[in-house]
Length: 196
Length: 399
Image 1 (tube, rainbow over the protein chains, first blue to last red):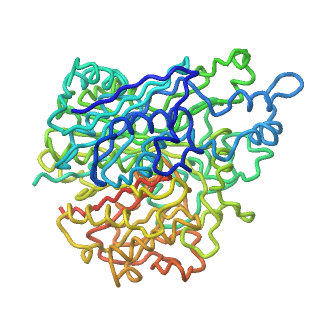
Image 2: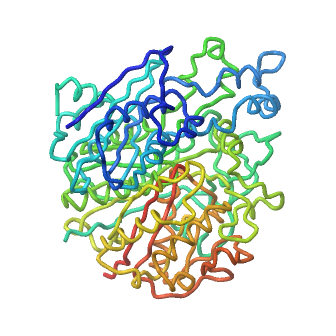
Image 3: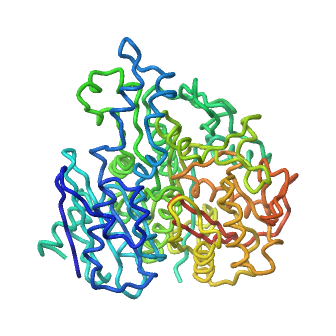
């Protein structure tokens, strides 16, 4: 099993554009997607993987937002500081870019990596649970290696991302199937060599 | 080989709050989209959608309710109630559901002191927690997941459930989907994306799959739960249909548009058909994704050509979204109800609001009245924003 696990501080530059085959995609990215693109490029730096490689991804529970909620809130209060429907529609939503939705939808890390790397195989994106991600991997019938990934943006804006290239037989699921933890925990442990 | 059956179903849809009511809506082909009532849409540039209704009236919930979780908790409860899960040890009971992005109550947040400090979490309902609650409530200890693959989230969940039951016939899986984008932020987020229908006439006609005058998608909401069991454990009298093939692929094309060639959607279909042990010639009708957007229809038509060759313009097709809107993370699961209706009734439903054929699409979309047909195999296709595709092949169960 080959794994990469990386952590990015809130002020740290994430050079996603340099890691893309299709650089124009970068305009759609938030920092989480950027970090995923960078980490997967590190994992696959000297690898050629088939286009049919299955790709399963675990999205961490959302604890941080960077789509511009504060600007929406500022725009939609009335003079008494209460929510104004008219201000929300006419000013609040106008403050958001049409590209915001790409930063909000949870399947975007998987989609952008698939688009950039030409991956067309079996896939899924699981929210929150390591066990759910492992169940996907356990029931994969592809004969070769699969790509597994997970990301988590913590409340303090620290981003953690892990990716692994592995065969199904390399994954022992029992430990995590009984635990209530996020998918990123798997990669932290795999990377430290504490569990397979 | 071990077969996988759907043995129970419960649903909350814009067309009704029971499977019988939803089936009646499919038969009547009446539209369930209208001007939104469950939250304030004053000043919205568009304001139509498909809200969960009972006897034609919108089911209202207290302000701040995460409606998708509200409905799935009832749907799963009904499925559990109508199924004898005591035949399965808790470790052999699983739950895998598709869903969407977290609900956020922006009005309550702005009106609270939390907005001053940026503590928005209290006004957010994380989508996957409903699955966790349901697993705990009903002792479903074998495994759980919340799939968030946008418009294929629920069909990917059903696909996983199918694989699990096939590999372990002693396991039962609750599967399906739940979603609602009908709240301030999510609704207008889709509007900003340019995806929503800008139909200015009757809201019931706003979603027009495959029609020449289609104007975009109409957001809907709902929840549907199924119980999947193996042929080793299922009670024949309770079997609704068999799931005999599943596949998922990715377009790897553009994030904004489906691949117009339909290549990977067709590949998913052919893989699912192969897994079912049949050939494309044995598929009797196709229940398509059919969103009502400009780019969806020709992409699905291209996929149909790849799957069925010359037969693509003859094989009857259907989209449920003209009737109930686009349920995003729940759409595919809800549309499987229509597949079951087709097989049980020997009819291909009318695609609501399909009035004028688009010569560039060229599909045999049924209009006027349902098409009578001896239906044994149905192909169900779905495709997500971002390029993920699913195909499910279902077989009629003849006792």
